[in-house]
Image 1 (cartoon, rainbow, N blue to C red):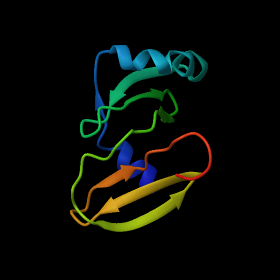
Image 2 (cartoon, rainbow, N blue to C red):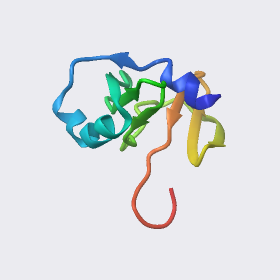
Image 3 (tube, helix red, strand yellow):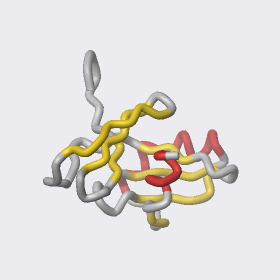
Image 4 (cartoon, one colour):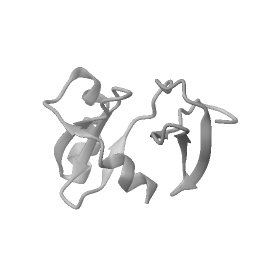
Length: 96
């Protein structure tokens, strides 16, 4: 799945200030690992059962053209022509 592919690039890190927003999820999920997307810097937490929760990036650090858009498990994923997979940014309100 695209979500599993993306989770495969996350790196385990010591908690950073950005992880504070995920502290409640960590407690709720029994989170065991603090993670970080090295390309966007967004924090994530992984539970004992492998579930990953994260925040949305505010931008994509890619200049490659759009190759495809995938809708999977209520999320929008963007793949660029260089083969990289990105969780799409979100804003509050209508639209992506």
